[in-house]
Length: 352
Length: 264
Image 1 (cartoon, one colour):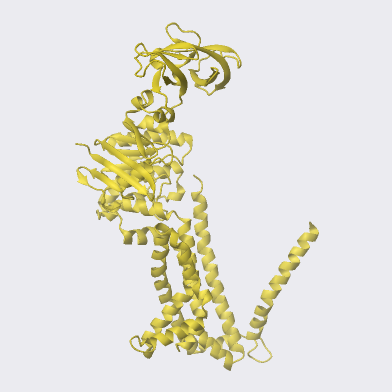
Image 2: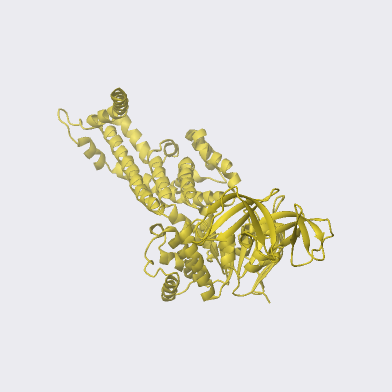
């Protein structure tokens, strides 16, 4: 039995369908991310779990209790917002203790719990400060502590790191995961940042235009995308237009050059297919037993730990990444180069 | 550069004279109650007049009631418009501007006409007439109060704060009194001070409803005495300025806070 169940959820605003047949079962203690571009319905779905929006149809169950139409203040669901939303008139301790005060806990109990929470977010001496005296990252930690203080059944995070700068974002990202695992709290995390979703989640729900595109663990989402949208949205991707030469043997042709894949292709010979390749699976030079394509080096961009190159293959340009090494010989722009990739790197999709 | 700066100062000086000369004139005149010397006699006369304290006390009490009722009426309305009915905003703004369009004299005749006979014979005794008076003041202060409150609410993220409080289990009264009210405190105070100033200086309503308010007292004094009305004008001016100064003072504290908050 799943802990959080969303069944056949639809949500429309007038004629616009924001969420279209959303079905998800989240296990207790699981960390699930909703990933997608803005306007894909991820935040709307999260807000329905929080109770701020009511689904047009469908059912939301938490721990087997129907919560579909329960008002947000009776749900016991913790929420963290992109804009922190700390109460400016209350101290940090006041903010964290707010939910407990409403639950009519005793003063000593509130004090104890607030101290626990402050220790959890590594800000033990900050109880007497006001939100305006904290940095953005600290404010968001306090917001997290405030949401967790009421011991919610489900923790919801709505793009909590989007307003922070890159370094703090990374720091807080691992903090969130640590705290989530420490407390074993069922968590839903909304983001448009694929890196966040990939690094944090037990499972990712990729959404587009109100629909679920794919649900699965990060490794599966990244390496085995099931739809062209998932393939192109998650990570950088090269796409080659190919024709099927020998479907059972998995042989394709790109601009007259043959490519092999590891598995049979499930479309007839002569059909057009698209081969998806991750930049990190491509390398420059001739490698025995791999597919080879030749082209001209278009750009070489040094990014620190990786070097990103673009190679013009005639009909399309592919991006490939090489890990930086001191002994690396960077190719010259305009040089003719062979691009190699193993058969197992090819992810074949029918032409859309 | 020098030329421009000269003319700038010239116009500022001219403007200052235009505003200050009558004030200075009134002030000097108010000091002349005793022939041949400058003295505060007129002020003493004013402060020694029990009528002054009575009418001022009455008006202050009415102002207090007006402020409380206005706040209870306008804060939840403005809050709800901001949160749930943003499309109604133009209509609500239009309604709040009505007191500028409809003269007070029309309002007071309307009130008297409607409430001087059964079933709502409110003008028959002082207590119920005071209710009418306060109701009228609430209408008159509506534009100022609504604008002040609305500005305050726009400055905070009402929706997210409300949702944050809701997700922590808070109901509407808790959200309003513990989250929204304290965070628009400065806006509420400036609305309250403006209302106070309006009520203290309002003549038509109080006069036609025949209540012992401050403005009719001032008018009466103006008809019968020479120096005391001038003194009274200066007193009420000082009071208004003190209130404006108070708004500025409290507002400055808030600004410092929001600037600090901008450091993330």
